[in-house]
Length: 444
Image (cartoon, rainbow, N blue to C red; front, side, top):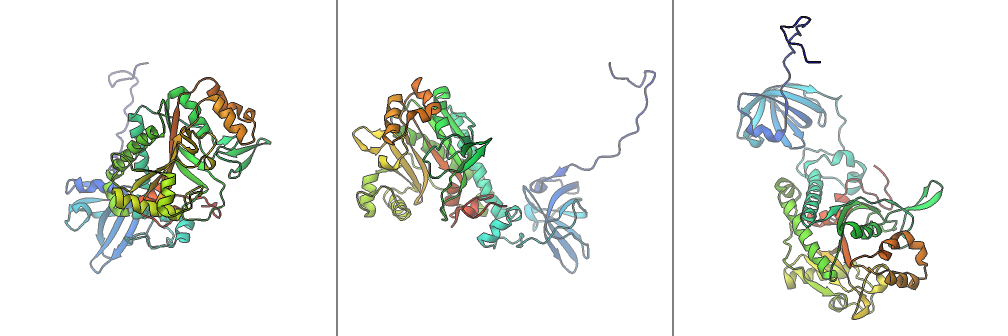
């Protein structure tokens, strides 16, 4: 049925709608508002200042701050109350962006807010780590604290954009799994409809299988480690940026892709200028080729015994300082870790099978990335699993891809929280984690 028009019988005149309120503007756009025009802002009361002749209200929204000028004695809701402000855009060189709101009406959109645990209007967030974690839903509102996650979000954007440009496909894999990925000792067991299952330690098995479908894949998602570590660098749940690619020659091809990803992440973070300034982040320069040292040489350099199976945190710090002094690089790849310390799917060095075609990437003296080449022949998997005293039949679902042909492949995983922690030089990874889960904390 076509709509009626005024000339047709039966048309009823509808009363004109009342004028609509001015559309909401963000605080950041106030600087471009035409002086004298009416503007409407919505956000949180960031700060109140009552002077003898005037009252200032500083409003905060996702884009920044705006100054509102009110007559002296105006009652302003307490800090963190959500309000709507309608008034006149007025030029003032002293205001944020050079424009403020005058002749304003302040309309509360909620009941008066409770007093926050710390004063969020102060430039620095002066809170102990327990206070920060206990009150995370409120204290993440602080502009400097919120900017830390803005760096994480920018990093994710750069990660995805770089890999999309290199022909990768983003995947999503299960987080309930039937067997451990890395080892049996550090998994969270769950009751899965009456049978045992585990929270995934990584998407490793699935991303390898999907190389057989898409050749190049990546995933951003949570991983779970039931490790009883109470340190400044470990979490029980963190965001893992996983990558896997096929048709490689060895782990150095994987490292080359990692270099491109890091450069893309840094470029994306650099574009968030305000967040970089607020957090004091020190952005690294990603070298055209990341310096590499063999594990055995690394042990010698730090003065550790030649039979040491892994690098200790202090070793990593020494190596990081060495890479900066020797190569001018915040990054150092340590390759050739002992096979005894690597998962069964790791490819050994053909010339010396005691060592692996695997690497860890250190960023400013802290392990950030684990990567390398994987086994790709079904017979090699049978041998590796039996060498662990296990039955390949227990891995049947995983191994079927290899029995149907898989290319030489490898990959890596970046810990997002560690990455951001090193960017802002946080003392504890929990400072940059939205709602950290660790040995002691399950809320908020």
